[in-house]
Image 1 (tube, rainbow, N blue to C red):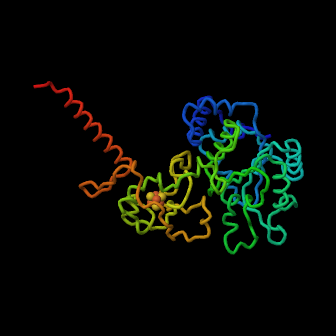
Image 2: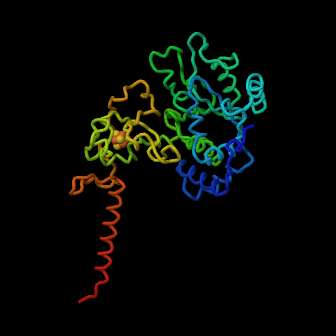
Image 3: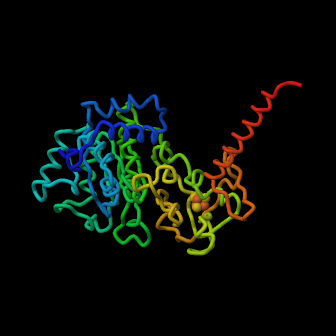
Length: 358
Ligand code: SF4
């Protein structure tokens, strides 16, 4: 079994509660649920997890493990009982094969199977083998004994780059091969590690799997398009677009739709959760969203434009204006201006109401 000492750093009670608070917010649960989520995370009832790798780059595991502070990785290894993970475990060869076999037998019907990568079926599945066993056979045996299967990342969920035309290895998603088991897809290249931990903690806290969409994606993470919460959205609404990489609009932070941003057709929480310890995400640093949580990714040119489903912004968006100097007002500054203006108006109104009567 792999434990939190892997991360080589102390995980204080404060770190634990910070991570629990963040994951509770990701699940869309109110703050009053934080103690319940914390209790579920601390319970002795840690679900066994077997984590298999197929055709992939290990970026999904890396996104979880390479956070600059250890909170998420520690929390995951505190919450689950990670029985087998080819990248993290010390054992190799026959020792590792035995560990996998023993974990499947010992926890039959009770473990969560997490899969990273697509599975090749061409030429009888010979293109991906571990210890002489084909990926498709490893998956069948491991999924057969699993309580539930989580497809981690776009390759396992949707086939990913391996399944893109011309698909020489006949790669398919893990999800398309799993039958008769609860299945959760967490696409993304890489997926947010918060979404994995939130999915497991949701199950431990509520005793059921989260509500999912038609692609078996948890609605709390994939229920909205990133276009709805993008910091460049006021520019989209005002018709201010970057036309080329490095042009003035690009430098000013304008909307990236004309450069092929797939945000209007991509369901994910990247624009609110972000990556690198919640600091940045592709659009925030000037790269259009490629739609990596959708089937369109790897089958659509990066510069192709997607259809706009809702051309107008929700009523609760701040008004989009241009300052007298011609400089755009961002969503945040517009909110700030609105708040200041509102406060000033309120102050004036308040003042007016206390004026002595003639
Ligand atoms: Fe943001 Fe892309 Fe939508 Fe523009 S098109 S607002 S950059 S998500």
